[in-house]
Amino acid sequence: MIYLTRRERFSAAHRMYRHEWTDEQNLEIFGKCSNPNWHGHNYELFITVKGEISEDHGCVINMDILKEIIHKNVINKLDHKNMNLEVDFMKGKIATTENLVTAIWNELKGPVEEAGASLHCIRVKETENNSVEYYG
Ligand code: NI
Image 1 (cartoon, rainbow, N blue to C red):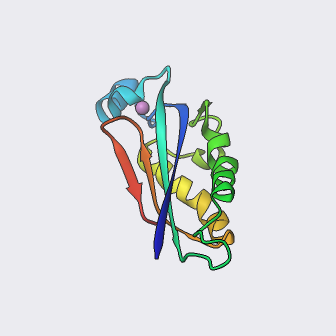
Image 2: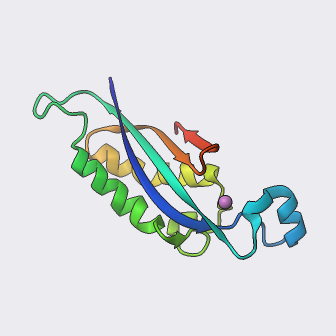
């Protein structure tokens, strides 16, 4: 089994909050990321897929196809967007990195399998110090 990782980057705004809580309660639970006037991060996204090496082309997956899948289903929807308001796969979810990473997994699983590989891990790095990994 071969594992292959593609890195992508995007910038997005968010706010972590529950609308039924006061701003003070949200600040207490979510910290600075609960700022009512939004804020952004420069995210890094690492998508690791796995599969066998194709005898036809010597690759696990065509990198151009993988890049296209990631851009169409994830990057184009997130980059320079407000993920609370504008991103279909984050609707109704608290905009945490944990919820983001599982939502990205759900967006990519089907298309990656159609392209002949399978998802192994998705990692979203929100800051230099904080990242979340998901293995499905
Ligand atoms: Ni934040």
